[in-house]
Amino acid sequence: MPSPSTKLFLGIVAFTLLSACTSSGQDELQAWMQTERNNIKPSVQPIPAPTKFEPQAYLGERLTPPFSSEKLTSVLRGSQSTPVANAALIEPELSRRKQPLEAYPLDTMSMVGSLNREGQLVALVKVDNLLYQVRPGNYLGQNYGRVTRISETEVTLREIVQDSGGEWTERPAALQLQEGSSK
Image 1 (tube, one colour):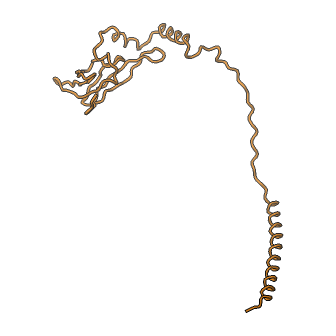
Image 2 (cartoon, rainbow, N blue to C red; image 1 turned 135 degrees about the vertical axis):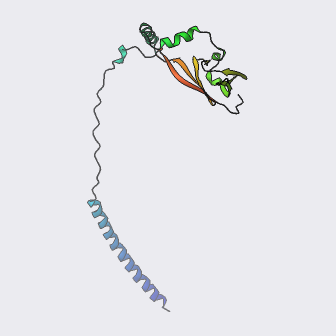
Image 3 (cartoon, rainbow, N blue to C red; image 1 turned 90 degrees about the vertical axis):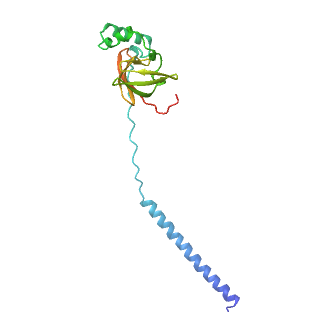
């Protein structure tokens, strides 16, 4: 077993050796870091120059605003002065007597079944807990909807509505069979 003085001597020698390695390693490390910093060159792309804004004059102030009453009256006057090809479709509908199912919106009606009467399908339409028999040619809904075809599962009709310009246009609509509905 070594004596305490030998232990002390070995401890001092080890400390000296370690401190010598540490100080020289630090100097080398610092020198390496400095050379690496000097060798690195950043590659940042330059920001492109902003485009020049060129203001434009507003030319719309001389036009009629799209939602003004002047615009509406000018459109309505224009539609009255020019003959409309679709106007002939709506004339007979305006002069005829309205049928009972035209008092209800189409979305309050539901087809609940169909019958075969004398070889022609008749749809059963339910409105306000009442059943109506509907045949081709009958009118349904508040948009001049005329029944064009009846199948076992659907009533097809043609509605005539006005577009934003006051023109009458046709659009298809249908009532699908509602099985087990409690409307």
